[in-house]
Amino acid sequence: MKKLVFLTGAGVSAESGFSTFRDAGGLWEQHPVEEVCTCEGWMRNPTRVNNFYNGLREQLIAAKPNAAHEHIAALEADFDVTVITQNVDDLHERAGSSRVVYLHGELMKACSSRDKENPFCLKTLSREHLRIDEGERAADGSLLRPYIVFFGEAVPRLEEAARIVEEADIFVIVGSSLVVYPAAGLLYNVRPGVPIYLIDPKDVEVPSAMAVTVIQDVATRGMARLAALLKAEA
Ligand code: OAD
Image 1 (cartoon, protein in one colour):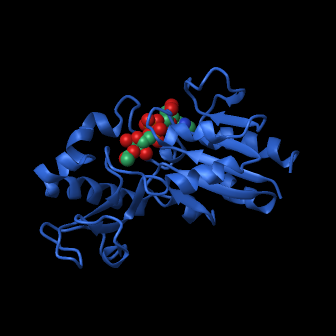
Image 2 (image 1 turned 90 degrees about the vertical axis):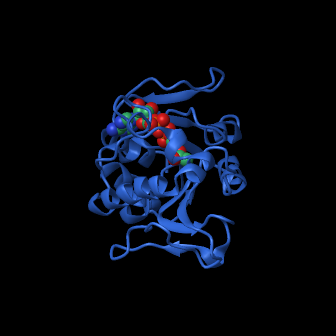
């Protein structure tokens, strides 16, 4: 089976009702990124940060995967599919994707604020216990924080993602402005000659030397078109 690798961003979940970050009215317009997604913001006001992600979690459990997530999952019938996502929602998994690499963390998890990657302190939140409450502690005694990669923090699964991209036979980008590094840099790990598709309703800047087939459409329709195209290549 050919290796089909997706790099997805906020746009793939937009039609499930999630705001993207940088479109007009996007999340970072209403909630300044330096307040809710940096270590400095966390040090200044951990409750504000936790409450921001508590709110997103409530939105997430009410949301459903859309047809784009479903098309991506269904392609596993014909391809060896890996989804590398910048999103922290779990909509790819809920749609049935079996291999999802979360580059920027997972909204449904909480972790230690002393050592984010300490597996003994990682806690999976549930529908019944969605919130990180004020003053709630991790197993190591530090404040519990969202398992989200803040700006300025290392991206723990980057090397794994880079290796997956290097092995791709087909590479597809869905719904990302490609402005956040190192995630956007994964494009440079695609081997020469490998077909690259990009689905986005807006113009997204890609390095000019790369031959990218652009499907200028929203994720649900764009993925339906691409799935039909790819079936012919399987
Ligand atoms: P952005 O908000 O930067 O970009 C969203 C992209 O989705 C844009 O190119 C939009 O044109 C496109 N879009 C909007 N609606 C769409 C639709 N219905 N179908 C398809 N595409 C659509 O989001 P990301 O590129 O994902 O990091 O942002 C990358 C990272 O920046 C995020 O993971 C997040 C943020 O800061 C963290 O939270 C750590």
